[in-house]
Length: 438
Image (cartoon, rainbow, N blue to C red; front, top):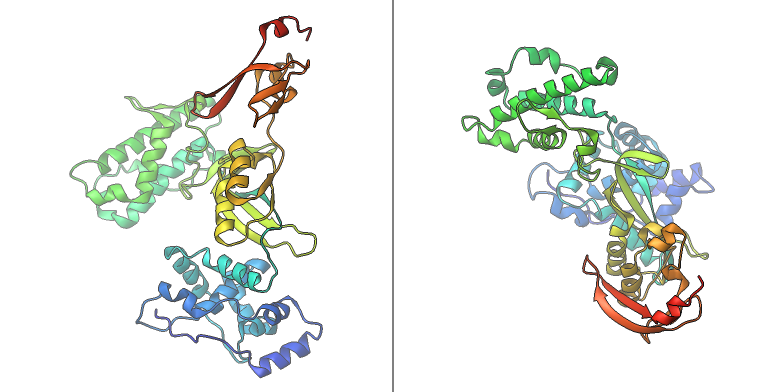
């Protein structure tokens, strides 16, 4: 499909008249268009379309419909019907009343085009730029960042279900892409064993029986992988994503050997590496306090000034188990690139690390504000002696001015810890410590 769309849009007079008559007090879509005008332009998406072929639907309008669809939680079919039948949508899209809209499949094709072109952030950046132009979001104010779980669009599987589904998914995929090769050797018993979904209520309940079934699945999977990696097999089979996922899963779940043995739970890789489903190989299990989920984590940054609206200024998605402090510096770098760095960046304890407190001020003149983590010294854990928080330190003078008993330090030495991080070793007089009653 080629892009042969208008550069700009004008609101038809009849559409404006009918919409204002239907909504004399306005509504959110009318207000959005009146305040901001068109949010997107077709040339913004020109690089995603070829120069020839059948004309495509206008990407500027599809981008706006995609946002409306998300706001209202509509399916593609419902969104396409809204374009045809809702006057407030026609107003915001600058469509004439008689416009027939488009087929619902166009929306999924547009999303796929955005992802294939690496342009999925383009909608967010364009809206944010328009809000900046209208002074609705400004730099050097206050912004806050927090994370929330994102559930993968999958069924959560037990370990046994996951292994069965991994093998079943690989077989289903090979049956589509290499049916003759698979049919030539696959055991007839596999059609019954892997013909339907693995669900816990159909599987054995006892531990020994489940282990036996797991190792039977493991042996079948190893047989399939051996056939695929046989020099006589087509080499391209090894590049099939479902096959690569199966291979990774078998490395994680089984001990190599003859016979194959199912790993105990304590022998599994950590959560950031462990595959949980064949249908979304990047989804991971995580737990935060009382919340458990399989999927991802999204970090949202928004303005929080008292005299303005709350506007999201950054969105970052990470694997579910990734610590929050792995994105702190990245968020500030993106805000700096957009010209939207805050004066104060408010976060919770998960985003705070000593390096971030220093770099935020030094590199961006931004105060990272949030609670620090608990002290991890043995004194703090045991509730005995004095932890580091009990000492008053003058960093610029490089001496600990007082201990909790009012004694000064006698030596300061800069060094590196086992991980290469700079530390300060501070010593107090032996006579002072021996005489201490604490």
